[in-house]
Amino acid sequence: MLRLRLSSPFSSLILLFFVLSVAVHCKTLKRDVKALNEIKASLGWRVVYAWVGDDPCGDGELPAWSGVTCSTQGDYRVVTELEVYAVSIVGPFPTAVTNLLDLTRLDLHNNKLTGPLPPQIGRLKRLKILNLRWNKLQDVIPPEIGELKKLTQLYLSFNSFKGEIPRELANLPELQYLHLHQNRFIGRIPPELGSLQKLRHLDVGDNHLVGTIRELIRIEGCFPALRNLYLNNNYLTGGIPAQLSNLTKLEILHLSYNKMSGIVPLGLAHIPKLTYLYLDHNQFSGRIPDAFYKHPYLKEMYIEGNAFKPGVNPIGIHKVLELADSDLLF
Image 1 (tube, rainbow, N blue to C red):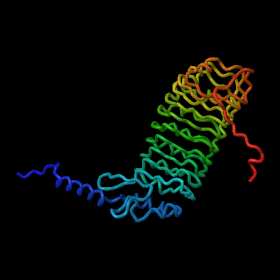
Image 2 (image 1 turned 90 degrees about the horizontal axis):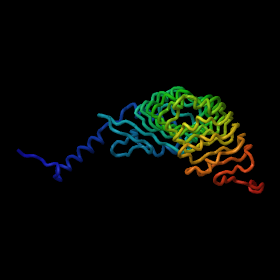
Image 3 (image 1 turned 30 degrees about the vertical axis):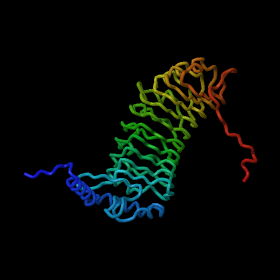
Image 4 (image 1 turned 90 degrees about the vertical axis):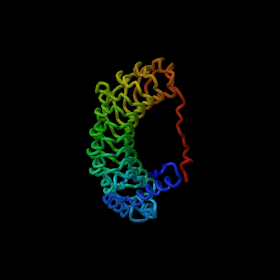
């Protein structure tokens, strides 16, 4: 009996031809073809000129559209990633995107998208990364955002979202990075976010948020993985609770430009890897315990703009850009 060895050049050639044939003849799911062509019709020329052909995954002669990544599932190809950023897309968020049900990554950052984020965003059950920062998106974040159970990274900074930060974000068990910086959020930061076991980075700076840190960390065992906490440039009041030292993974604590008061608790200096501590431009008073100055990891501690007693010194150099009036003339 004749047996073909896989290691022979002939058999390897046959195998390669078979794999290529499957890739070429595998059809792209009609649902995804329709959705991408709808998106193509709504986007600006900078994207459209690079999207040639009818099949976004390529048809054998033409490559996949720029920014579109596909994978094979059974007899079909599906779109798994869409990255169209920094190309000055103008107009509302393309709702047709929410028909790409196999998306794991959606990156439309640094464009000029306007209007609300549609509630249909909750349909993207396989989404792991959603990056919409540096746009002009408005209105409230829909509660359906809490249906993205596989989401690990959410970037919504530098938009014009308003209303309260949705509590539904606490329903995202895989979430590690949450960026909500520089929007128009009001109200309190949901303490339910503390239940996110994998959250490493929380940035809600530069909004219109109120409340206290004590309210934020009221859930026992909250924020077990949190390393970076940015609460700066809001309207937070109250003091720094001693319980904040229970966030033992904390490395960056940014409280600048709030309305916080009271003393700086000694327990904060016992956070093992605290590296950057920004307390400036609040209403803190008293003295800062010596333990902060002996901390092996603490590189920067900014304290100006408070009511500390004389002799309290910062750690590191806080560089402030100073411009003369002539520098502002054109």
